[in-house]
Length: 427
Ligand SMILES: [Zn+2]
Image (tube, rainbow, N blue to C red; front, side, top):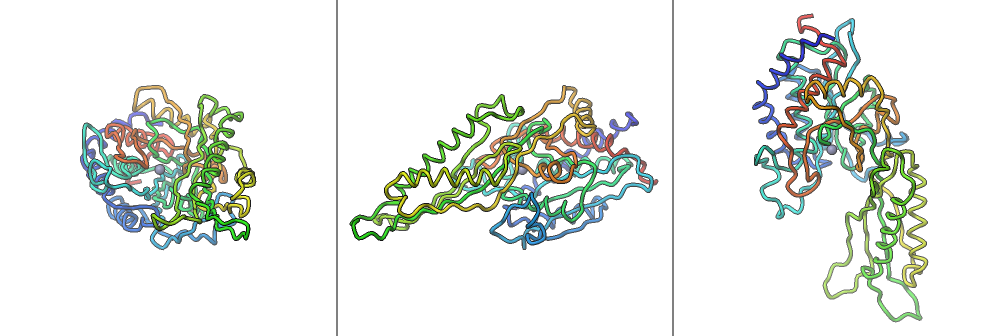
């Protein structure tokens, strides 16, 4: 590969930098919470087509079409406001390299509770080289970086030497069905990069995630019992059981990638609803949560284990045993994955990182799930996450480090140049 290319492209990224920051701010103003991505997707589709000359296709994920896929997660919501955007640049007739996907997700999680933010989460603000706002790190900065990497290549007078796609997918934060639907429709390539904000380190493994819902009811009809039982108080039995299960999961032998971590898998209770009046005794409660899985762990086995664990705890309780809690599963049914990081794909990424950052490439091991799993597990496409540095993802005062965004933009341009090859635009 012609190593004289990166310099003009790197220069273009510097020249485009203030435009890239404006773009990042612009897309961060869209409150694109999962299920409400459409306005942002329209903005991105128009930009990719009008500004970058890409052929843009849009589609709404159809749960029925992917329901039998092993990577499918059952949603309890529709995708009417969640269309996937695919922007394509076909390679020249005689491609000189590998085809490539840069993929980001448009959705973000809720910024609640709003009152705890230092400033409006939908009005991104700069402080000390960082940009603050909901979704700026996860992952609008990455989306900006991947788009401007491509834009810089165009502005330098080149285009990819192989088929290339920029994709903006949806519902990554609850299911991953946007990315899955795109693969299922045939939007594939020889490799894919996802700029999730894990600090300029390529992910070599990630846990899976399974969502559960536990419904409890202590309204027991029993002639011999003259007492109303408070379901919130009894729910402690189930909460303790879940905490014990989490402990057990983390004490078990860990896959190699996770061995250095004391606590790689979380069992988290994310919502709890009970009661509607301060002076009443609540008898119905529903809690929802998430359990982490190691790569190779079967989702069905974890479901079975969780069911057994919860019913054992309920059996030992005089009240919950009368009407055992019901456990169901929805949303994330994501398997964990370990990537093979000794492939030409990773080698190219490491080279691009070393060229731009002038530091040895590092790896990350993720205790959350990402869309990279679909490519690796079900399509045999090498894929990983590599993105900027940030913090407070899904939390109050989310931020992204701006210098790292520029670095990622350059690494993505370099990666594209190396992986796809570049040809002059006129050809
Ligand atoms: Zn993300």
